[in-house]
Image 1 (cartoon, rainbow, N blue to C red):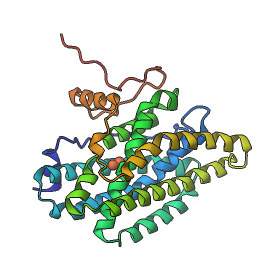
Image 2 (image 1 turned 90 degrees about the vertical axis):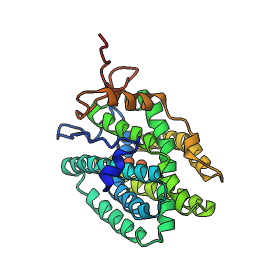
Image 3 (image 1 turned 135 degrees about the vertical axis):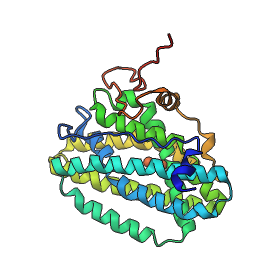
Image 4 (image 1 turned 180 degrees about the vertical axis):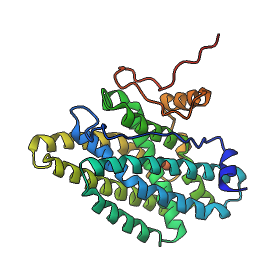
Length: 298
Ligand SMILES: [Fe+2]
Ligand SMILES: [Fe+2]
């Protein structure tokens, strides 16, 4: 059985969604919020380096997993992350092509950094993967839960892509943790992984958004710096609690409930006949419902 067959026997669905990023998408895709747009753009920049690293790490652990269900979930995790980083790469290429070719320098630094990280023992890398995925739970809760405030009037093609990624992060939130527990299981190493991964990703995202704000000429503007400080405070306020929970001994991501919107997204996607079309969220609708039409039952 190859990894694709394995993934098919998991309840985690590997979706191929053709999100496209044509040239008319503005890098400031959230109206009036260049700083928040760039914080999300900066996070996007890290994904084609971070997520392949997660995939390589989990793949290396596959032969160590005795549990067939966990092996299937791990294969589905790899398939989902593979779709994520490919979509992020297409979006990042748009950013570089349109306005920020300097980002290539930061990409080269991330590439080198993940090559170095790849030399760590598997236990450390699995702890890093589990740690990153723990941090993502808070990020998902923030972005999905506060989508109405964050994405009001935003370019739907980008907001929908970010929300899709977050929904799938919720869907596979236990996998890296379970793989770590099944193969290593120590508390201290896992806690180090939470800090190591979170600091790494936040640091690289910051390099990305700082560069974009510099290119825009906003980095030197006090009002822009104030707006950025406000957005960073919002991010920390929302993400820190789940980061602290992940640092507790006895932490288990399956105890953190999923947002109802994410669960509805997953359920409605499965009901759609043309599920391969990019599902676009209506960012002008104050409720921002899941991006699938109601199924007629008559
Ligand atoms: Fe992902
Ligand atoms: Fe993930």
